[in-house]
Length: 155
Length: 241
Image (cartoon, rainbow over all chains, first blue to last red; front, side, top):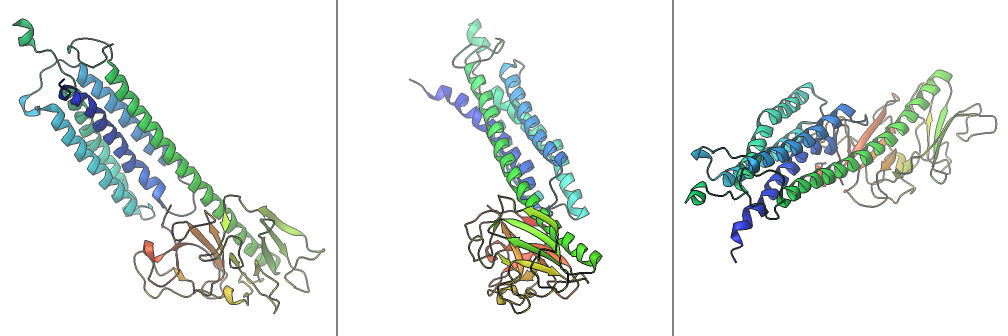
């Protein structure tokens, strides 16, 4: 029995969960690892961090499903889509960890300069990392389903 | 629903694979959210407890200045209670029947009072000991009418020293407690463990008689403190677990 044909379905979820989990490192780790003093964490900060993680997870799941259900042709440069999606996911996860480390180092937001840098990093996450993860999820979705070949059906 | 996820691209509905993947994402979000929220709540409670006790110290000092009298803040570790009263003449640092309480608060249950190397509720957990030649007068901060403290006399209640080396982790406003002990109220988030715990120190008059209260956190050498020292540093603090 050829089991290798099912391998893409088995690894797709790993790619998605990797991105979802690494988002928590970028957003939540700075919140819990450093404190500027005994003042409580601002509720807006917790809401923003959790909201970003949940938004990203919902977007990734939706985009992955869209990719699986899409029938449009992919450009040749995006082949094989699953491998490309995996590489983008790995890059996004690495950037997430780097962001989390950078913010945790720059925090506690006591200095205005550090605060601005953390805002810039979080903005960069929305501009670069989140779209990259969405693209990765779409490509992973395209690559994790075996479609019927039109030529084989018509032959 | 197709069990293998093997379907034409144009077909509708969700396969079991898609449902499983969606569930994996939901579960991972749920687990990580819970884990982080649990950590946040635990640390916020610790911060709240430390802030409350620090506020009581500040309030006692203000009362001393306002009343132009000695005010005593006593930490009763057996009852886990903090009480404040103003001394009336003669000042004996003990609450007499005629001296009414200014404040009485319970120690939060999650806070463990312990010094760096001592046990929970040990002799050095609240190192403001020995007044007026009486070694039995322990675990109390006495503010004079000028806002500065009446210096405790016990060996474990000395003033701290400045750190030998100022670094990025140990700024100039840090203190270095000698192994024999230095005065302070030591509040930890757990009753056991070595450097792998969060330990705060509340004290007054670290350097000079100005009545300045300080709230610092232990930074062991393993986490960036100076080698061979017991450094307590001002914020920002890094939590350890």
